[in-house]
Image (tube, rainbow, N blue to C red; front, side, top):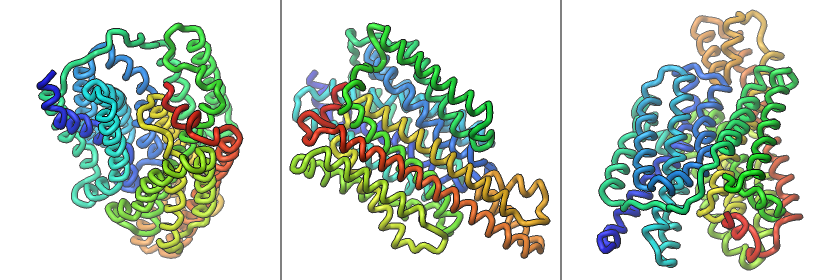
Length: 501
């Protein structure tokens, strides 16, 4: 025990490093999306899957992984997770097609799900005194926030120095160092009384979320009213219903659904989900806007996104203090209305919009996220899962609304004389459309190139605006629900509700 106490600083560093690398990977890929269009010829739906595959598997397996690590042994489970994550990162860097990369991202999500809850369990096991534990968990939460904020900057720097593969290769040595530190310093521990893993619940919940996400992402290509899309939504609803029935029937459910009968808990959890839903969808679109239409390089794109990260961090601190003085309901509601206003405002952005205006928009949006999440707590497994689920659905829904409008507006505005092959390429994504513009211009077809550039730009901003307006509507609806259901003060409110699991 004395050795463990002496090694506490190194133990904490190793656990924070493990948490850092998997959360860095949530946002590091966003800035690479335009590069993946150019290098791997990824379509809009493939870009969505590159982002969503990781967070989808991460969210789906998070609760079950935490239970398994408690039963099987936390140190060994964490080392296994770091190994899976590191090897999958190398595999991602070796891929040559979008499909291969998506599979690698799924396996990376598996590793992340094994790592994330285990780091928190080990911190709680090592730091037994309440004050020390609170400080350690606070550092853990701060590390997660820093990783998410630094992802676009680190990714941008790697893309400018090396190839796109580097953003995946770079994760492997970090995971290896983390594994070495864990192997040397972290003590073994397990909880013999941990609940059994609800395998049917895990399978059904994962299948429901995967079916819903797949249907959403593929709907623009299949048609929102097509038989395949409607069947996908119906099947997802049926599987989700089966999951609810399973959780109500079993004695040790994966998720205690009785929590959601409390409207305060549901409103609190929903508010966090909407915040991450909105900001993830925005991140998916804004990196393409910055690089394709503002001409920013990858590193510059990451730097230009800093107002979001800074305002989230600032508003989280301010929001925590404000909630004590004016009440949780007011803080969260104002945060959600800030998000709604932000998306309504940013939906007006065009190529000529100044960065100063965009920065102001991002400060408003980041402040909204910070206020919503200020009282959410960092130690809740359900809370962590809802954040990831919100991010997954944000990219799926907002990205698909964008893709649908992009495709339909482009079809209506394509210039005459464009070959069917080039037209199909332009429909894949805005980046692919601009690449066709470049080829036409370089082969002496300046007039067609100019008309196509106008069509692609018009289609992109039609989809961009529609996606942002959907996010604005969802945020406004969530604000009204929060105003009606959340308690005025935190004593029985958001923080307590979200930490009750």
